[in-house]
Structures are given as C-alpha cells and as structure tokens.
Image (cartoon, rainbow, N blue to C red):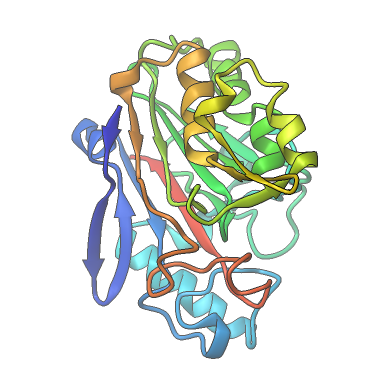
Length: 271
C-alpha cells in the first residue's frame, strides 16, 4: 500500500489529493476539509452539507470556493444521494447538473463514469471515502463507506461494477481510502462487530476488544482488506491515515460533535 494523501492549499481552501492519481494526469480530484469557507459556528467554515447548516447560501458559496480551488465546473456537479447502502449509479452527460435540487438520483452511495467533464461528488463526516481510477479504460468512481456500506462491501461492488460496465481490469484500478474516523476513536457494539465478523477478512486486524461488549473498529483497514481481497494490487492502493475524529481543526466529525456538525466531500472528474 501507499501511505499518505497530499495536503494542498489554494486561496485559503485546504484539501487533500492522492499522489498516484495526480501522476496519471487524467483526473482532477480532492477530499475537502473544513478550512477555507464562509460557514459559522459548529459549521465553520467549509461546510458542504445539504442538510445541516445555518444558512444555505453559505453552503452554495462554499461549493463555489472548493470548485474554484479544485478546478471543477460548479454547474455540472453530480451529487450522490447516500443511504448507507450499496447501490452504484452510472453517471452520463445527461446527469450533469444533478446537484442541489431536481435530481432523480436516489439511494446511491457510489457514482461512476467514463465520460469526461462530469464532476462526481459524495459526502462525509466520519464515513470512509473511496476513490477509484482506471487509468487504462479511463473510468472513475467514488463510494461512500460507513460501517454499513463497508459490511455490504460497497468497495468491491464498485470495482465489480467498473469491470462489468466499462471492461476495467482490476489489476489496473488505482484506489484511495480517504480520511475517516480512525480505530483510535471508533468504538462500536456487538451488533456492528457481528456484522464485521461475517466478512471474509482477518477480523483480528480490524476489531480490537475493549470488554463489556465493546470493540474498536478499523474502517480504513477493513476497506483496504476488502479491496485487496477482491483483486486490487496492494501497490495501487493509497491510505490517508487521517482520523476525522482526532483532527478537529481540519475535519468535521459526526460522532465527535454529536451530529452538530457539517460535511466534507470527495470530488473527482475525468479531464
């Protein structure tokens, strides 16, 4: 695996990128932070949540700023409609602009496309962002993997969808596992642990017993093991190693802030 996303700052907007993706020259992509926007209070400052905010106009301005910083067309963004499931939506030019209102994209926790100039956007505040790029077939995908999506194996299912839909070869696919709540901070109960134990991975690598029916759960490592298990090459996967719960200055965290918080977003577009 590769460790470390790259931290960037453009006009005061801070975001992270994946060096292996940048080297291809095929995409623009980023994972946003909470730095560089105009939101206030608990949502300070780069809040991209469409459901949690003080002023929606501030969210629109934040999107304009992050789009300017990352080089994305504001009017063309395509948003996911996340429900902690495993549905993957194929996006085409007909979906351009399905963002703030009037979108027919429902119950989709992953978006994928092989068409250029369609910015895909998915949302996070502790869940795991999964970035995928096939540099040979020129296909991109983003997947939202909280614990529910992870035990439903949305990562491997997205890889399979890229193979089935676009003819991708799993040995070619690059992946990035972005900032999420870390094993240092993510305590779960037996209900979650029992679902994790159903996965065909080494559970000792991802569940640390705390006693009293509590466990520390490693979302990042679980997604990594799922992706290598479905055939992605170890050297093609980059881990951020960043915990959203620990890093209050840079990231919103739903658990840390007890739901009174904003959202980050993952962006990616073929160029």
